[in-house]
Image (cartoon, rainbow, N blue to C red; front, side):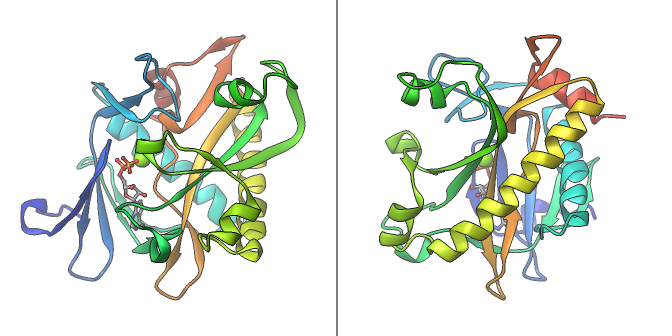
Length: 243
Ligand SMILES: Nc1ncnc2c1ncn2[C@@H]1O[C@H](COP(=O)(O)OP(=O)(O)O)[C@@H](O)[C@H]1O
Ligand SMILES: [Mg+2]
């Protein structure tokens, strides 16, 4: 699928990927070896800063996304994936409108869906009065944050999303169901590899027909995974999907 990206219109430069428009109306995601980190300079799935370049991280991201998105499709969750060119770090995807685009006052709307099996990170930072770090959930715990680097990705609930006309309550329930299913699939998949999934994040959008579909990526930077009680680095997670 090698596309000469210098001839394509660049729509957006993200923290880790560049987004181009293809002549057929689809989108080309050009992955890079850029990684994200949090304000303390640590690897963090919710990190909003561009961290160091890590060789191979773009490829690991594509391979892991391809692996999981295929499993999600088999389970009935529609995704934006059209085709993948691992060598050139490119992914062709269906074009979507990110959630909340119509009512967004600034550039770059979107909602992040977080699925948790073990409470940690920003979750216990917020709710530490009622739940200790490391507590296991018996069913996936799903919640939402706004994609908003300037305002530190605030937590937002179904009621507020609905009242601000970002996402209707009906659609919220559909996406909650998808995210719970994704949580189950990923947990089982990592368990087979002797690893434990703590949490992950995904994004959805509306395709041109108005259907909700899973978008973006699920790479080593989108999930916290532990092995033998130790947090795996992005490189360690990525290596699993390299074969
Ligand atoms: N199918 C799609 N259609 C339109 N935009 C998409 C699609 N898939 C992903 N995106 C957007 O493209 C951007 C990818 O680049 P990324 O580096 O992840 O950006 P960010 O810094 O916003 O996280 C994201 O903002 C993501 O929401
Ligand atoms: Mg991103």
